Length: 428
Image (cartoon, rainbow, N blue to C red; front, side, top):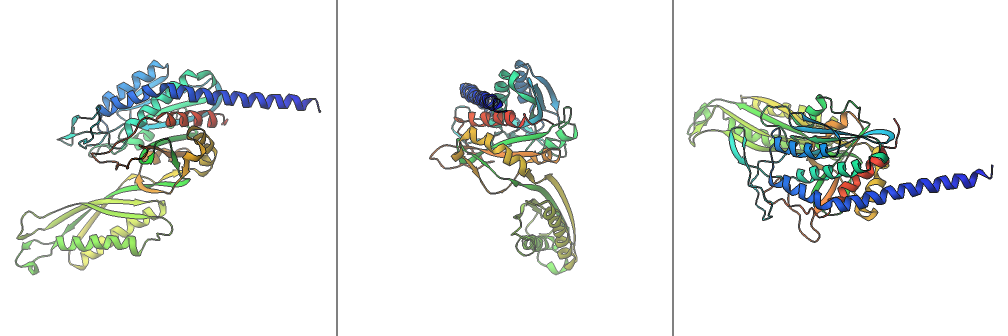
């Protein structure tokens, strides 16, 4: 029996040495590839496309993936790309996701690769910009695919690369985004055992990774409330039923759902009215007013409760004044929930990519992500990657001044590659 101990020790040493070699190789390849990752990112930034219209972006991504010898499918959920890498070792099916769409925003930065693209959005010509960093997500995943393809014989299991369109929401009444990808079977054939995604953060310094177990990002619902009253002359409001005044009372009432009837010790709730349409002339009380907004919750039960409270509040306030209120609520995303066990098991992968001191747990956010739909089908983990220049002030996402430092995108590539080698070894 004692003779077996040295053999066992040698086996452990060999396994440890192999793992170290893999880690060093990932680090070396990711660093060497960084200039190309930056080049891809800046090309995509200069040529943004809106959701469900990312045709050139789709072609650009697919051409690269095909050059790596991957199994590539295009046109998934209209303009998405899915690629399969079958590793040389047995293991799990790991999915990695990047979103690819831009936003209808006029870029105001002075970078040499600034976007000047114009496109049609619901019949209107609008400027287009990658004002949320999806260009970096695409480049990171393209780089990850190249590194893993070059290490194919050592890759455990199967890797599914998902390049998702329309994360910001499809135009008008079109279907799109993660929900449509799931509907079309992207989490099947082969069935995904776990899915991972990242988001660049303009509030986090480059080189850092932030994460949270459990609820991480909010659900997003859009609501529209139509208040019907009775028109009248502005000089004699008592002859009508004023839907503008009633709508103002409803808007105030919606805020009491947050401040007086939601358990904010459990999770945050946000109700914001962002659009108001009513009236055509100063001295005419209109018959009808419509206003719209968004709801953010971080608990699925609270999400349903808030929906019911909004309907009840709007309808009862309207009835109190002799009007009627119609409420329509459209769920855009679910709560982005990071599977706790998966977070715990994946943390070492992130720490090796960014360093222990640069891998930081944070609180939840009321921003939303349709990555949540993938989490309905498999354990999921979504984390943030720093994009703020060192010593600089952050810029807000979804604004003309949004700016990302892309000099350390290799940290994202290393994180994804580490995840594949670590989680992929889990046999299913």
